Length: 247
Ligand code: NDP
Image 1 (tube, rainbow, N blue to C red):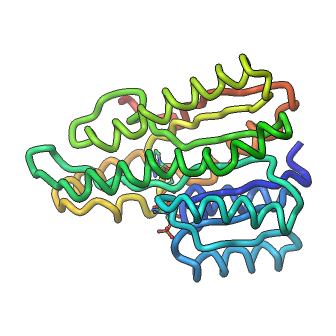
Image 2 (image 1 turned 45 degrees about the horizontal axis):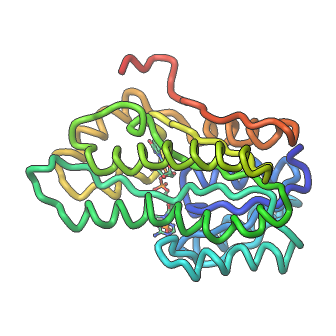
């Protein structure tokens, strides 16, 4: 059931996070939005409320552990608990390794790996105490296959797969009843390509997205499906892409 679920969404200021916030709130979830662009969060939360939904927001940099703790506290203060955390914030500054965009490598690891760890660390005590909760993450098809120019980004998304699988196993072994879902989107038309600083890579990726990109709404629907399953059921992994995708 989605109705009345309290759902924290990181990376909610655009793209997949924004689409998911709007869809879930439209289906009766109470959403707690986090990202760095507070003005965008305020606008999205305001529009959700105008349509009769329930949404609050908080400025969140996922690389800062204290921000992650704070957004869990906010959900508890305003709505009384957390049922689901969608750890979706991420960036994709792809480039060939030979370009030595070392700052990009580190930023990618900080947000896509450390950000996920910080989110899980913030919510896990709450989920363990309640013996209930759902962790959802956005990996990528780049977390399933290797792609040139995606060594670091892909590596962070492979990490997410490993991490979520062990979280699922340990929860089952420890009887904490934490559900896990990892989503592996293909090309989704969002702001993600703006994080690519290397011009040639960005142009090449833009060509791929022009041909194969689909709406972030499609990912939102999958997140909603995963949340909507019976409480004793984990739907663990989804690959989501366009029907015409050959790679
Ligand atoms: P967008 O760029 O539209 O959204 C990324 C979101 O992450 C934004 O809300 C951004 O908000 C947030 N974010 C980035 N850095 C931080 C940070 N340090 N702290 C908090 N929030 C942060 O792209 P998508 O919607 O596509 O990306 C969402 C997820 O989907 C990412 O993990 C991405 O890797 C994954 N993905 C996307 C695919 C695609 O083709 N688009 C394919 C496969 C996976 P702000 O800047 O306001 O902080």
